[in-house]
Amino acid sequence: MKPSIPKGTRDFSPVEMQRRNYIFNSIKSIYQRYGYLPIETPAMENLSTLLGKYGEEGDKLLFKILNSGDFLNGISFDDLKMIADHYKEKGMTASSNSLVKEIENITSGKFSMLISEKGLRYDLTVPFARYVVMHQNDITFPFKRYQIQPVWRADRPQKGRYREFYQCDADVIGSNSLLNEIELCLIIDDVFTTLNLPVSIKINNRKILSGLAEVLNASDKIIDITVAIDKLDKIGLDKVIEELQQKNLSAEAIEKLKPLLTFSGDLGAKLTFLKSYLTTSEIGLKGIEEIEFIFDRIAKLGLKTAQIELDLTLARGLNYYTGAIFEVKAINAEMGSICGGGRYDDLTGIFGLNNMSGVGISFGIDRIYDVLLDKGLFDIPTDFDNTKVLIVNFGEKEADFGLGIVRKLREAGINAELYPDAAKMKKQMTYADDRKIPYVILLGEEEINSGQLAFKNMLTGIQEIRTIENIIEELKNK
Image 1 (cartoon, rainbow, N blue to C red):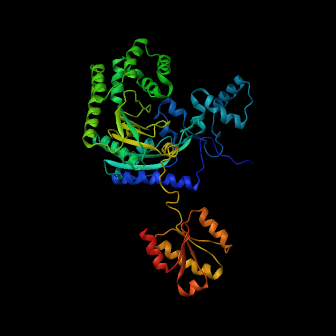
Image 2: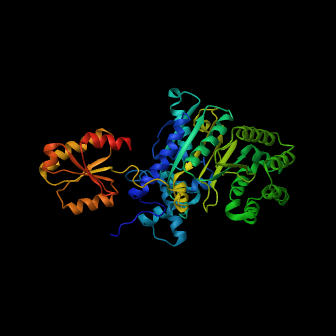
């Protein structure tokens, strides 16, 4: 059998993992600096937790897990007849493999719900809301949490889009204050300053979009409008209009929407335009007020490197957003958003805990990695957490002594290895070179008796005689 992995997933080499860990650690340290605490949730959730939270398109991208054992057990005759009729219409003979493949094509996915009760998480926010409700008596509010774990989406794999990828989330829940939105912008700025990656932070407000739907007399189509607008930079204006037409948005409403989709100008011009456009919408004007507060405070504080702009077409299609929404893109990079998020006023209400507003962001680690790699911005050494010292193994006696030496190095916080076999010197030195291990300790009978060790710098080739205490002091100072 030829080994392979599912499309949209990847293996990572040690060098790639060192680089990824550099990104993870950079983000984690900044989260902790701002007072966020770590949690983790299971890879799988009950489908009842996930379904209906991401919109119709999001639901289609959920990976469902077949029930354990005989997943057809308990299925009624009527359900099986529905399957048989489905296959008969297609002129197919139902086999176990084709059955599973075709299940999602059956009307409304009813059958798949009968054989699947769990699914892989689509994001970290909905599981977080579920976590908050289940653990509300153990949490101090406002609760600031960060979470770094993989998520899964049954999407079509392409550049920057994977079926399995990591998200690095930070959320504050239990507070309505817009100071949280400002803090999240500062976190974004700190992270990408640390990674030396120039970015643009785009901000909008779902209240503005709700006001837009009111002005268009299409409040019942707010989801259709936001989902279509959210695709503007991907499919273009004509395709967005075509999609809105297919959703039965009136020609009059589409004509009234066009100026918003094509307007350009600085922050002041955009705010003036919005106020005149949404003058009859109370919720729309409230959204403008929130945007002005955020931009005013950030202007006073200043950002280190990130640019920030009001993007009137930013919609973010997830249904649970209710206030400020964020999207971050790398400047001069052919990549979609590398960070995003927003305010959700009652996501926990779905699970029975009302009036619990939250706001959060999520860094897309895989896309960030790809951008840093494409731009040559990994300025860290690939051996930054690698072995620093290799003890050469000349035989059983030397190896026994070397075990004590390598233990002292490790207890001093220095990454060290003892070569496991008494191989030829050339092979052990080649191993050190290939692994980019900077120092080697050679132990012979003389070194064992005297405690004076041969300490070689693999970069310069210089070899000196040192005690283990001298070696530890030198390496710790470096």
